[in-house]
Image 1: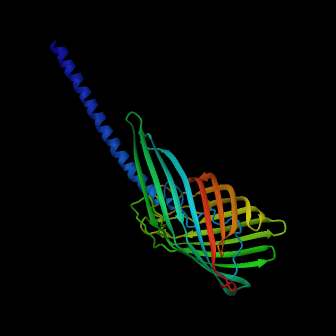
Image 2 (image 1 turned 90 degrees about the horizontal axis):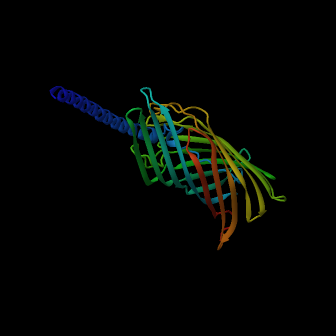
Image 3 (image 1 turned 135 degrees about the vertical axis):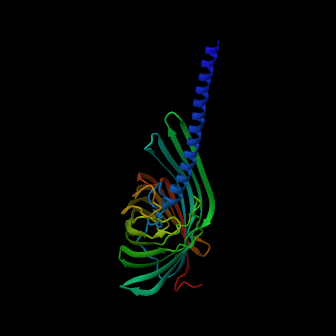
Length: 350
């Protein structure tokens, strides 16, 4: 009995030691998951989980489609483009000490960009000069999760979420446009001024908190007799470093195109596409997961209508894009609803 009791005590001691070891390992696992959550927050808020910081670019894809190369006549105009996006991204990697780490993020965005446009009487190389100013207000709802799995111990998941309305960075631009019978074309330059509401400790930032510039060329061929329109735009975006995160987004290329049929001067419909390709990888101390380069392609329908709202002529367009061919970016669906009105046109006073 004594030997049996001593054996039982020794066996119970082993079980206690093994149970304590498992509890200790579980505690380590929980601490690792907490660390992973912190890493995931840093990666997602700094943009390392997807290429381009926060998966966001200064140039919002799909903004130039139908009529991309057409500059309005001399005068003052007001436009309200509204951008809606819903997408997600996920990825996983094997860890050096065994096990795996999986990250995922879901994002829903709404951004409104009230824009003032002044087409001046100034001639530049035979074209018309226009100046623009854009304010940015948006809502972001971001959900992120990180799962750590270690063989023999188990797995743990940490989730993060953030939602808010915020003021983004204003943008200013200049355009020069030309017209030659059925062909209309322009070049534009714009700059993002990082003075919006930015919080490095949050996932939901509308502000980019970095200087950025974009140069784009666009052209539209429109035959009013047949009603056929072909439009396209291509440009390059250059990015500065975010001082809060030490993250520098690489140089980005974007191209958009549309084929549209004008049923009448009041209504048209067609198809539009865009493609995005990062030309150089992200860099800086904040790019902790590597120099990712993003890519995405999208296609969808576009419709537009012109009508009178009392004495005011109104132009409205609606575009939808479904994304595919995605690498190192969010993948989802995007939409644009844009309403434009003239504020003043010479010769049309009163």
